[in-house]
Length: 168
Image (cartoon, rainbow, N blue to C red; front, side, top):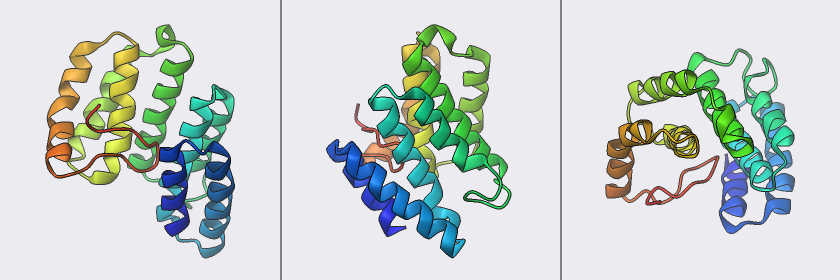
C-alpha cells in the first residue's frame, strides 16, 4: 500500500517517470504478497500518468491489469469492474470526446453514486465527471456535485489512484 500511495504522490507532483517505476515495484509487491488492495491505486496512477502524456493505449493496458483475473485480484469484483470502466470512459473522453458512450457513462455514474460515499470511489467519480464534462453532458456533472462537495467539506483535496483535484 505504501508504494501505491507513493506512486500517487509522484503523479500529483507530475513526475511521470517516478510514477512508472514506483507503480511497477508496487505491482510486483502486490502480486508477490497476494494482498490486492493497493492495486486500484497503482492502476489508477499508471493509467492517469499515461493518459496525461497522451499514451492512451498504454493507459488502457494499465486499466486492463485491474480486471484481468490473477493480475491483481483472483476474481475482480463487480465494483472493481466499475472502477475500470470509469477509467476507460475517461480515457475515451480524453482521446476523443465524441467517442464517449453517453448511456454507458450515465449508467456507470449511477453505479458509483449508488455504492455510497466510499473515499476510494472518489477517483472513479471524478473520472466520470471529467468524461461527462468533455463529452458535453453537464446534467451528468451536476449529479456528481453533492458527493464531491461533501468530500471537499471533509478535507479531501485530491483523489487517490487516478489523482484529481476535488475542488476543481
